[in-house]
Amino acid sequence: MDVNASTSLKNLSLSDLLAFGLNDVAYLKPATINGQDVFAIHAADGSQLALVASREIGVAAMVEHDLEPVALH
Image (cartoon, rainbow, N blue to C red; front, side, top):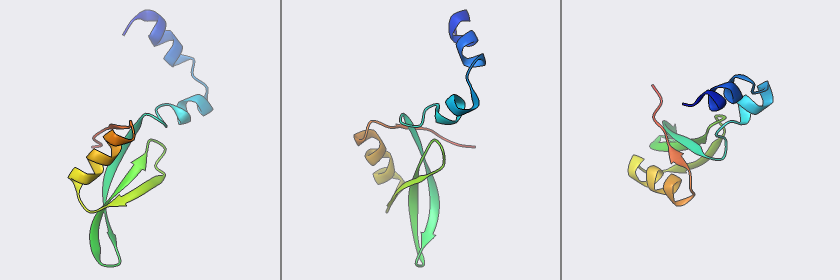
């Protein structure tokens, strides 16, 4: 990361930080709905976007909608 980018990130406001990546990244989270195991697609802010039957379908849906799938640990 160059110095300018590092400085810019350090100067983000709280609202900018909360919105960072909101329209760019998403993650999958296992869920159980009505007794059925599914995967929920979530935006960077944690809001649920969709429910899908499998991890593979979830990743494909994210890519189709120009979202970068990210792994959470």
